[in-house]
Image 1 (cartoon, rainbow, N blue to C red):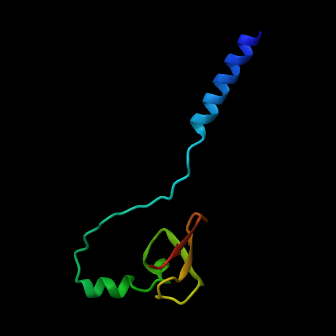
Image 2 (cartoon, rainbow, N blue to C red):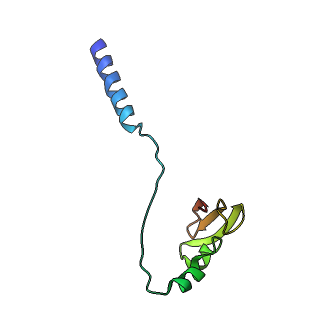
Image 3 (spheres, rainbow, N blue to C red):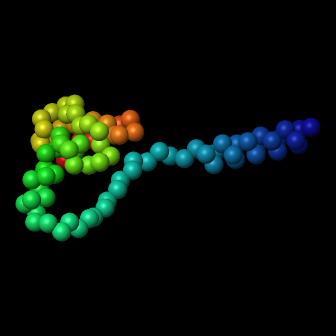
Length: 90
């Protein structure tokens, strides 16, 4: 009986430890080439609070803190499916 209890305890602790993974911050880098003059592209995408005007997945954009187009401004993106993303301008 003691041997079964010990074995069950070891198996349970091993299983729990396998799922105890440290949470990490996600960082993504992606590059896209656009066949258009840089000035024309920048005019379209430079406003931090207008992502919803050109990105099809974004339903609305709201500045929640700070000033638009200034470092440290925070925005809340609401996606077409109802999900949300919080971002900070750097």
